[in-house]
Amino acid sequence: MLTILYTLIVVILLLGATIFVHELGHFLVARWCGLVVDTFSIGFGQALWKRKVGDVTYKIGWIPFGGYVALPQMDPTHSNTATADKEIRQLPHAAPWKKILVAIAGGTGNIIFAFLLAWIIYLVGKPSAPEERNCVIGYIDTNSAAYASGLRIGDEITAINNEHIGNWNELFLRAALTHYAQVQVRAATGDSRKLEIPVVKGAINIPHIEGIGPQNFCNVVSVIPGSSAAKAGIRSGDRVIEIAGQKLMSREHMIAVVNSHCNEEVGAAVLRDGHRVELRVKPIYDATIGRARIGIQFPNALFDMDYDQIVHPKPMAQISEHAAYVFRVLKALTTPGEMRGAAEGLGGPVMVLWMFWWAVKRGIMIALWFTCFFNVNLAVLNLLPIPILDGGHVVFALWEMITRRPLHAKVANVIMNFFLYLILIAAVVLLYRDYIRMIHPLFKHAAIETNAPAVNSNAPAR
Image 1 (cartoon, rainbow, N blue to C red):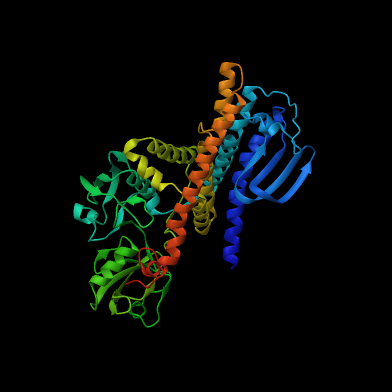
Image 2: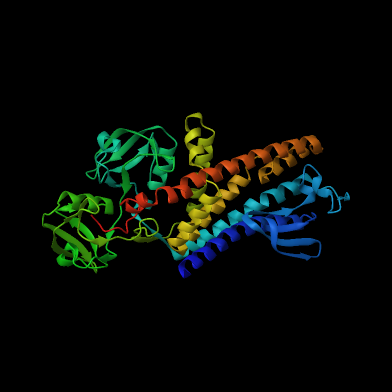
């Protein structure tokens, strides 16, 4: 319970800080430019807390997905120049350049915050797992199209459709944007070859290369008393590195190797306190799971990544990597051949909360890294030239600078309402998609997912 409470508090703080710095950017620059500020709000909807200081109302809304600074002189429809009793206020006209500065200040706040987080990550260090540094195949289903195409355990994917691949995140992104992947592969021997592998939709409807998994470690969390692993001398804290002469590339790989030597006593090697220890173990068939096992438990693969290094990526490199990812997705959304895949991969508020939760569960430095990425993402998306977003205000201000007069209020109102409805529809679609992907399966397939070795690695190794 305390762990859940801690995770929830950290998620709220990180998401709240992201929203706060964005709105603070608008607020500070608006004040500096002499604009009228009516409200500074973190969150939308009815206020959980509200206080008026001078002419500004500060509040916290109960809907946490965003915030706003009410700036009546920034409103192209002029609807915010009315007071609560509908009396029209005569406010001084704000120069277009001031509007532009205020509009971009929110995203600037997020970028400054992202750089601050990037510097912390650089100085302290971030845990890093093999899958973040390479795209080595740690497991492959022998019944998959990838296996039939010639992909094997130990191979490293270096490119998809001539686009460089440096880690598994890049692989997931590139695969989601295509229907058939031409994969450049480098074998453990150094030889390179090209394979044609089909891309299919997965359990959450995102295209991917089916039947493959990243390299990870067979770290032993606990050993079942009386099991063959216990009899062999395997201990909690060991890392199983070899079974039956095969170097293990992943937990899934170990499960397959164990099952292939059912009721055979085979050699095993574990890494214990930095030293290799040779053992003998006999996989035993377990009718309850329909395969052989030795009786050990792995960490939870969802939240306990196999971090084996502490890396110190330079701040600018972090920001550049995050921005490149966002711009790649935006490019895909405007590219006919990739548009559908990119749209299907988008997530909504539930996905955002889940990702924050996932990051916090994996450690505070991972949480800061994801918050840095999210701030860069938010800054870029908010500056898109779409009405009701910050970039839309920039467009309206540029129109005023060029034509020497603001856009007619009625025209601006039609444009704003049109895009407001579009974004509301998009939000509903994304919420529904998040429900179908992330919430509905918890109820419909809970038993299946609990028993799936690739998803739930707390189950005894087979």
